[in-house]
Length: 329
Ligand code: ADP
Image 1 (cartoon, rainbow, N blue to C red):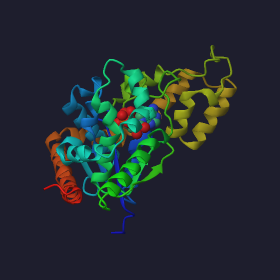
Image 2 (image 1 turned 180 degrees about the vertical axis):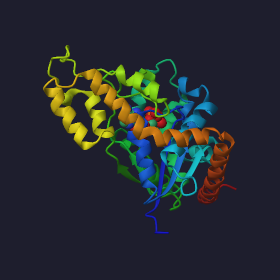
Image 3 (image 1 turned 30 degrees about the vertical axis):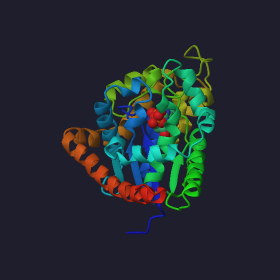
Image 4 (image 1 turned 90 degrees about the horizontal axis):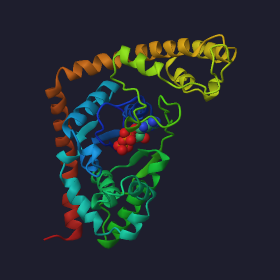
């Protein structure tokens, strides 16, 4: 086996069945990173408790997400895949880190400010401490690299500062500063043609949908708003259907659609039918693998429990060092 470059950590809240945005923006990258790094992928169920909607059906949503991750190609023999709450050491480290975290810094983070606007009636303590728990997730596994989109960059910088504060306060070097790997996350637009694809906006296309459901969703997609009639020429550059063709269709077909849309040679209905067909071909293997995993849910829980056991070994070692560094009796 070739030498890996270090350890990667990434987590996502259990939001149930994943959509194309999750796949193209995150999961695909998780799969690719396995070649170069030792990867630790975590379904962060404790983080989900900060908002009321994501607290519902945690067990079911965890399973749905695990099925998608496995079917997409996360290899549990190679990577560690587990559920956050199965490694309680993360809560302990979170408390230790909170003692070196200035309150003022937490409430200034842009993501916190955004959250209090989104849920003014539920500004809970966990919401403020979210970046501390995220730091604990990362630092517990002595992570070298965290792949993130630019919006998460302040959190990684925060984790790095926390390492410096902790190591300075206790005159130690047990925690290591993670590097961030800014991944250019393509922003996948939803079926409304306007906003980021998201389950809460109901503008998403689930990876695990049936071919019929996929076609139905695709047929509802908004196209170039200027193209009102079949004979109007369209502009593929402003059409989300065309953006997805670039991902799911072959080069020749993409070129054909580009020119035929501009000359009104192809209508939006045909264009969408082609897209749905190509998506269904692309996702067929994924869906078969997912169905196979879904037939053996107990095996999937075993994978998650085995991942947690491996994660706990690393976590407990870090915590022994952390408790010692603090000087706990
Ligand atoms: P979380 O709160 O755990 O980040 P999300 O479901 O919002 O949960 O996102 C999970 C991952 O999928 C994140 O890495 C996010 O950037 C990515 N993602 C979600 N929606 C999209 C989208 N429409 N386009 C690109 N990436 C997306």
